[in-house]
Length: 80
Image (cartoon, rainbow, N blue to C red; front, top):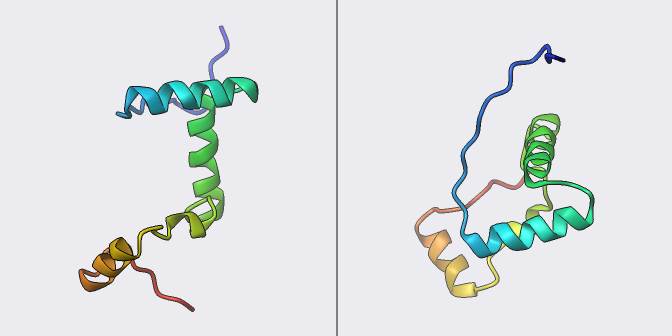
C-alpha cells in the first residue's frame, strides 16, 4: 500500500445540494471530482498567497450591496 509522505487532513464543507450537484457535473465533464477541485483551489491559494480567482468576481453586482458594504466597512480592500 502506497503511503504519501504528507499526511492528509480531512476538510468538511457545507454547501447547498443544488450547488454541489451542479459543480459535480461541471467537474466531471473536466475529468475531476469535487475533492480534486477543492484541492486545486486551495493549492492555488497557497501558491499565490492570495485569493486565487479573478478579484473582479468579488465586486457586488448590486450597487445597494456595494454601498452598504462601504458604509459598514465590509468586503473592502486597499488599492496600491
